[in-house]
Amino acid sequence: MASNINVDSSPAFAHIPPWVKAKLRPIAIEKIQQVYDWVETEIIPAERIFKAQIKDKRWQNPPIVHELRKKAKAQGLWNLFLPNHFEESPGLTNLEYSCCAEIMGRVYWAPHTMNCHAPETGNIELLAKFCNTEQKKKWLHPLMNGDFSSAYSMTEPDVASSDATQIGIKMEITDKEVIINGRKLYGNCKYNDEVQVFILMGCSDPTNPNPWNRHTTLIVPSNTPGFKQIRNLTIMGYDCAPEGHGEYIYENVRVPKENIILGPGRAFEIAQGRLGPGRIHHCMRLIGQAERAYELALVRCIEPRKKPRGKFIGEFDSNIERIADMRMTIDAMRLVVLNAADTMDLQGNKAGRYAIAQSKIMVPNALLKVIDEAMQMYGGQGLTQHTPLPEMWTYARFVRVADGPDSAHRHQVGRDQMKTAKDIRARAEEYTRRYKELCKKWGQEPEEFWGIV
Ligand SMILES: Cc1cc2nc3c(=O)[nH]c(=O)nc-3n(C[C@H](O)[C@H](O)[C@H](O)COP(=O)(O)OP(=O)(O)OC[C@H]3O[C@@H](n4cnc5c(N)ncnc54)[C@H](O)[C@@H]3O)c2cc1C
Image 1 (cartoon, protein in one colour):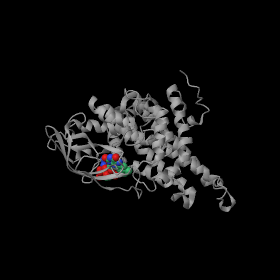
Image 2 (image 1 turned 90 degrees about the vertical axis):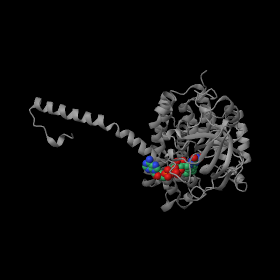
Image 3 (image 1 turned 30 degrees about the vertical axis):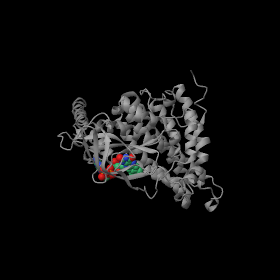
């Protein structure tokens, strides 16, 4: 059935490029409009209510979030991220979800109201992809229902975790159970009692000659004896309540063997399935953060109380150019993200690896610059809680590291590109050979400096 919504006039679609609009199905058009209305009317006006409610009770999701989650679920604004090739999916493609995720990304906690937040989206996709029927019943369905929430735990303080073959937490697999000993860094904070399960990657077969078969992924309930949180990690000074980031110790933690996902030694298959979607979802949401920073900059441009030398700050040429740069940077970032989402839809997550890495490397870096410029336009207030800009900057900065540092992705992209050098050099040699033939034909002496090879 066609949608009554006009994608050429509704502000919900204002930033969606024509090639994407042409691909949106009626169900997606309806959802994008709904998400837009949700964020405009329910979330942005409530930002300061959210802050006030978590002021004293740092590690509980505030009442407003509980209420909004119920309401969003009743309206079908729920789990929109899970792509339509999963039977549990509400029906959107990655590309269509990207348009929704950008809008919800305008406010950091808005995705939570729709069960579309990190790390839940990546975790749910992981469980939908790799769990057996029993595990789905026990873990996936309650997570999708929003009954509790989950953490993903791979990073460790004692190794370079960007090289996941080094992950060392010990998992001893017996007939009935897995016994875990070691330390972990990151994974959402257990102080928040809604975080009830940890998806843990550990080393179960350290002497296996194939380093890609040494690791296992399993589900650890948060209340398992011996699994303790040492502290909450602050991120650039923020405690990131009410989600937080923990530092953990496992001392003889015993988990039933049936909590192993996919089978012992198969953690790398799972990590690849988990991290691709997780990364791109962050980037989708960051475009929304960029639009928000840009809008704040425009608001400041015509702020009547702030007129240095009697002029609006938007009347200074430097700021006019700044606005132009911000606009063009955001539009370019969006194309990179939408291309990654479309590639995932058309060719699968594995084939989309380059496009996902491209987003992961380019988007947070570009966004840092956009937010930085917006801060500059706000002067002293831009660096304080008078604006959301410092928290937005911190989010962009942490995505440079979370789900794998961008340096590691650049290294991977560069290594893959180096493999193309041989063919490209062969083409360059062919140009020179052909040039020499043309020289003969036209009676010219070949110029040596012209030949690169
Ligand atoms: C806010 C936040 C939330 C996070 N949430 C989670 C979570 O929920 N679960 C979880 O498990 N982890 C989480 N992390 C951890 C994150 O995924 C790791 O910090 C990251 O993967 C890097 O691992 P590491 O810290 O061990 O750094 P290392 O592996 O020691 O790397 C350090 C640095 O070395 C350089 N480097 C590494 N590899 C290469 C390379 N191939 N080429 C060039 N340079 C390289 C990079 O500059 C890199 O930043 C989170 C991190 C942050 C900041």
